[in-house]
Image (tube, rainbow, N blue to C red; front, side, top):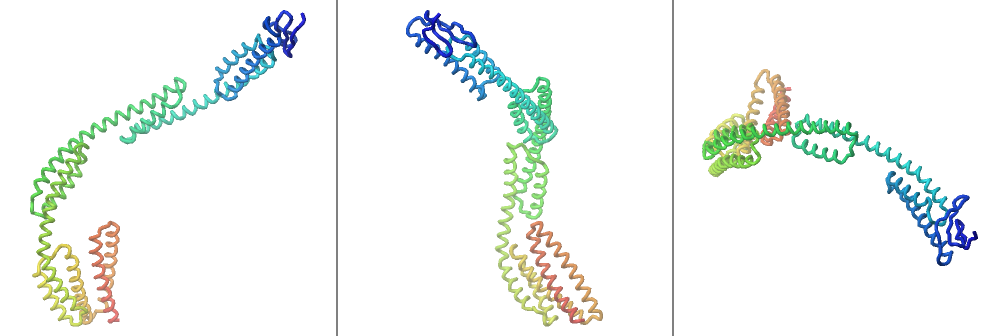
Length: 411
């Protein structure tokens, strides 16, 4: 039967039958009974092009990894069914060969995904083991605040991990869940006991507040100040009360103390005003005392200093912020006069040289001890003690210098 239209992969015969060649044979794929046979050829070519596009699309999807191996196998079977016995003109054998080449790629992807899945499972098992071990560690701790937050975070981490085999997953979950339950039980017991203790503390503090309020109007400043220090120690020893009342209790307790200490400060301030005139008198006495130095006439210096001491006592108290300054200046004069007396005594003593040396040794040891005490006070940040020790050290060093001079005179 002659052909009326030829195609590299088929033909259309005189009856309008359309054939496609596959290998060494051909098969009937349809008829084209109306119109130009070339139009029939073009029609069946377009069908082939559609199949070709499907194959290319499948190849790209496999290459891009957008299909799972199972979905890819299903898509391959679908396209293969369309190519096999397809009513299309073109190199169907080449399309089948391209489809055959995709099967190993699908198997390779399936194997790769299996390895990836096993790796993820191994990593998930490692992470779940870590989570379970961490939870067990927390369950044995007393970290009641951060522990609960950490366990919540660990639970979220667990949820984000893939499941393992049922046996492995159940065993690790049992460890994790058991640890969480044990911690929660201990934590509840701890806070229940803590609440009981805090309620008891609140009752103790109510009593301490009553004592503090009863003392707030006292004008017996010394003993009452001591009593408040004792109350503060007992307050600290009582421990915290429930949070909802702790601040209120403290404000009441502190308020009672503030009333007392404000009254004491006001009374002291009033006394300081009265004592200001005494300070003026003592400043004048200090001017007299300091005029005795340097000592040139020991008897006159001693007599003058004794007279100043009597008038000093008679002058009375001075404001608190002046005591250290004024007393320190007077002690300096007293020490200088005493040093002069000791020097004179050494001059008349048959063993004065030996005694001078002994005195120097004692003074040096005393200075060393004072310096050690001063270092400790400075380390402790005790400003008051530092000031006292500095004054003491200055006096000792002055005395030592005089003692060394006297010893030099004897040598």
